[in-house]
Image 1 (cartoon, rainbow, N blue to C red):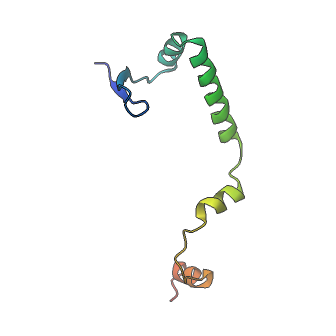
Image 2 (tube, rainbow, N blue to C red):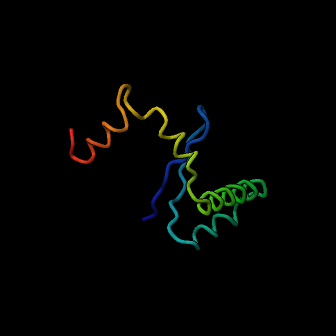
Image 3 (spheres, rainbow, N blue to C red):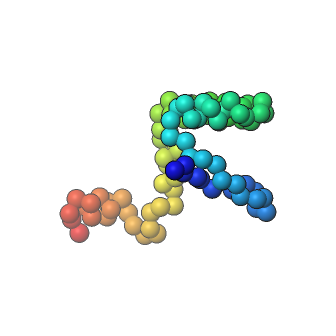
Length: 87
């Protein structure tokens, strides 16, 4: 039985169901059916994915995601004591 995955577009667009792909052969077959602009979009996405996976995580990126995560009034010393079993 073929598995189907719901694909949605912009709000108001009709949803369509595409078969779920689990092998390289299935993916290659699907790519063969794409239009030239769709292949260009896919190629750009793949290059972005490869670059993201190849690049080490940046400290600046981590700091941006962590900013605002601390509770107001909490100090680093207090958090460290808590994580080390202190009060």
